[in-house]
Image 1 (cartoon, helix red, strand yellow):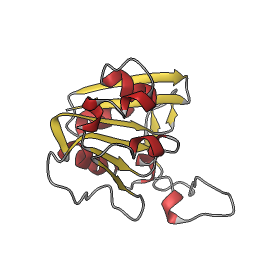
Image 2: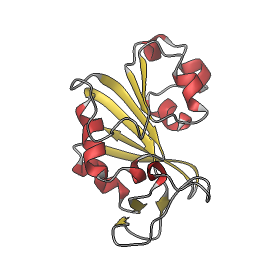
Image 3: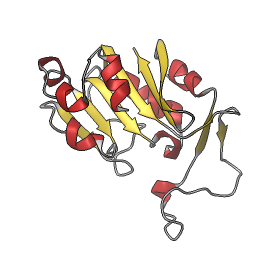
Length: 172
């Protein structure tokens, strides 16, 4: 994800340097769920907010329209019952130059499918099957379509390590 953020903003260097740049300091950033090792770096941005999933409903973001320039979420959307609604909300809260940069597990050799009617699938510890880890959608090769249907006009994939290291960039 860090590489995708840097590429998206045309920054040559490391994320640690980017968050200290004047351009990054002006970015109104929303992080939906904490993005692992990126969170401590992104939290250095003065206009950074975190909306923790699942206590925060991604399909009903309580932020004004066009309130952010960057929305980031990592391995969260597959747990959202209505992923199009979640991405549409990401689009709604973005400015006209905004970007949504996110990851989801992708099964690259098939299309996206809902898990409705299938046995429950959970992430996390096998001994812990809390609803917040319940997988509602298994994303596939057509994951880009969800971004377009949600109102984004540009979708790109950034590949750090195929097939597991794919990051999606959706721009307004």
